[in-house]
Length: 274
Ligand SMILES: [Zn+2]
Image 1 (cartoon, rainbow, N blue to C red):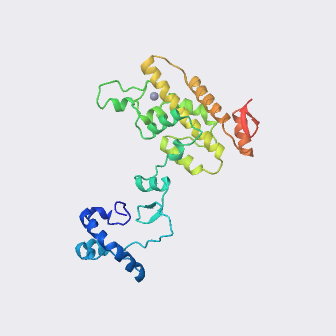
Image 2: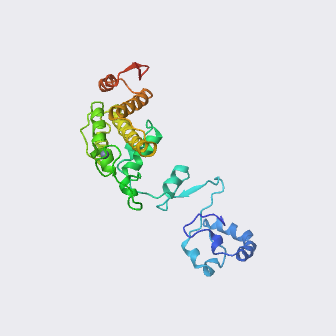
Image 3: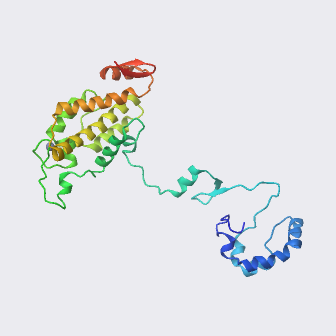
C-alpha cells in the first residue's frame, strides 16, 4: 500500500515521509478499531491537515476476507484486470493502420519477399534515382536500359517489367492491370473476403514479382548476370506454385478453378503438385 501505484496521485511514499509513518504506528492499536466500529476507514489523525493531497484520495475499503490481486490502470485511467495484451495496448504508440498491412504481412508469405515488398511500398529500396541524390552515377535502368531507374519505373513503367506482368496476368485472380503499387494494394484491399484463396494468390504473385525483379536488377548491376523476361516470369510462377502447395483450403468452385490454372491437383484438403 505504501509503495504501490494504486491511486492516481501516485504511491503514498512520494509525499508521506518515513518519519510520519513511523509516528502514526502509535495510533494504530486504538484507531483501526474505532474506524471499523464507525464503518468507515480514515487516515490517521492529523494527516489530512498536514497533507492536503490526502483529501483527494478516498481511503480504500479493505476487505479482510479477500485476497490481494494485481490490477492494471489502462490508458483511460480505468482499473482493469492485468494481462500482457492489455499492457501492450496501453503502452504502445497507436500509429494509424497502413493500407498495405494485410498485403505485406500474412502467414503464407515468404519473409524475404514480404520484406522487399514492404521496402518497395514505401519507396525505400536503393534505386538509382535515390543514390544519385548523394553520388554521381548513371541513373539508367539496368533492365531496359531506356529510362531512369525509380520505383515507379522499375516495377511498372519499364518495358522489361511490363512483359513480366503480362506473362503473369492470366494467373492472377480477377485483377485488372495496374500502373503502380498503391493501385494494386487498393484493389487487393477491396477484394478481401470475396475469395481468400484468390486474394492469397494475388498477394503471393505481387510479392514474388517485386522480389525477383529487384533481384534481377541487382544481378545485372553487381554480378554482371542477365536473365530474360521469360526466365524471371518462370521463377516467379514456380515460387508462387510452391507456396500454394503448403496452403490448406476448402475445396470450392473458385479454388478448383485456381488450382487448375496452376496445374495443382487435390489431396487431403490441399492442392498438391500434379
Ligand atoms: Zn527499365
